[in-house]
Image 1: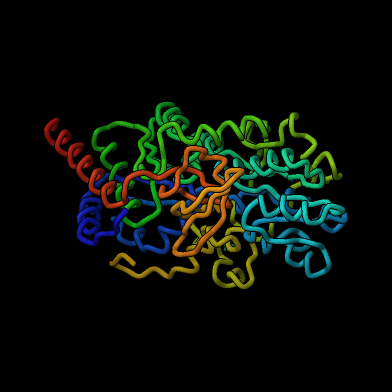
Image 2: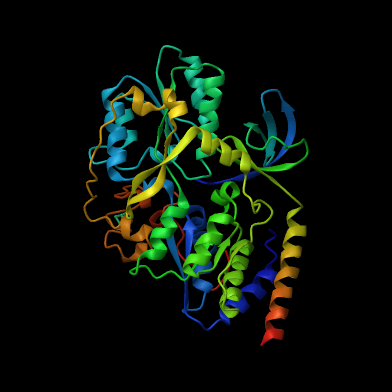
Length: 360
Length: 80
Ligand code: SF4
């Protein structure tokens, strides 16, 4: 969307004229980043709050799951392929990066197809792709499994820690301690799932849900669309990010999810166990499930001492409320995942010192 | 992590592999999740896959949405 200053000024003025108290949660980590970078938060009147949500896949991965991955690479002779975001996430004993320093074979890839290619290039090694991410990322990972099967690449498998966003939103809306009046819904998760899941949420909880793009003008417009719903005393699910998101989502990607994965209960950092919120490899593709090939330990979540990521991921507190923020915990020496992942709320707040009064 | 970037499809070869132009870089991606994508179209790329075909030019869209918002506002003030 074009970032035409005049249009944006108009939108800001209109938002500033709002007098109702409304807190909106930006669900997605990419929004947290974009909002921090833009300085939009500082331009909002005090009665309109933007709070960060559970939409950073690395951040919501349970501590026990991170520890299990680190144990896997320390114990087994395999190549672990992963997105770069995971490398520095602190486990209880070390991070993947530190494990690599000590000799574990861990490689950063851009696409799960790179991992399939790696498996073809090293036919005598086991290549495990660490599947982390929401509905946006799970279809590419699913497609990589289907491609591996079609090419009979048998030394490729996936350790799926994929999660689904709507069940987490349901938990947030149902928690009386979390005050969220409306959702700025994730643009790229919605490319896949479309509008229907939010229609159900908007109806059930009477809260406006607007799927929003990532440019400054997109975000301002998403906020305005929510404010208009409040004025109309309505709660609908709407799409602001129309140039990419279709009402029905991407049915081809949805079908990949149906074929390759099955929904299971899974635990989230900050939100605990949520029924039906995880994606495990389906029985049909169980030959590609790393859990069936390797003994992956079931490790309890040991909380990181002093870290409040869990509260931050549920919008209960803001990064500035964490006593370690910026002092003991910073991007060079991150204590929790919210400071590691560049879309984590702590990292986003740390990186973009707020400038007052103008759009950056 | 859910980052997506728009890319314009330059060529399509076998097995749903396409070359897209992303900010003047040519990248090979899979279009298996957007089988209808055609040369010249814009797609949103994530993790090496086209996730959705994008339509209209951005300018057109922003204009269309502004007009729509305007309409909503007018209806609203009319109702008042
Ligand atoms: S600032 Fe650091 S320690 Fe505090 S919540 Fe964020 S990641 Fe955790």
